Amino acid sequence: MSIEEIFKQQDLEKNIKITMEKIKEQPGRLNDMMNIEYSECNAEERTITFELPLFEWEMNPNDVLHGGITATMMDLSLGLFANCICRQLGGFFSPTVSLNINYLQPILLKDKVIIKAQLVSSGRSLLTLNGEARVKGSDQIAATASATYKVMRK
Image (cartoon, rainbow, N blue to C red; front, side, top):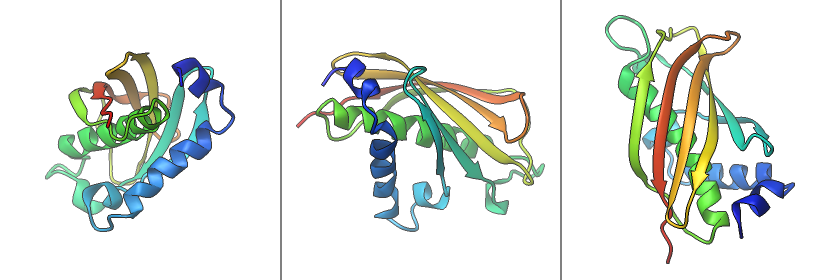
């Protein structure tokens, strides 16, 4: 299946939800503890948006979201999208090859994080995605990410 066919499908939303269900198969692990929620997808823009609540354990000593947790949120969001695409391309898993994060604004405990993941390019073996994290209700970008994922085939 080609990328164009994947994004023409009406069931892109269904496929991402199936990919997300795999997280629940391993309760207590970090991905499950993040409580990521699907928000929306846009096949034309090749984007998927997720919402993530914040928890006390994710805060650094300054009571803002720990940078490592921000990176985890980005990798989880972009990685879910990459894994969804990978499976549609005939692969079975899409591990992270590289992840670059830019921290632009602090995120506070009272906030909810919205991450929009966008497929930038796809080849036979690599997927490149970008992400933007915002505080829910704000237009300001709190963090950006770019990541590459490997399409693992059997």
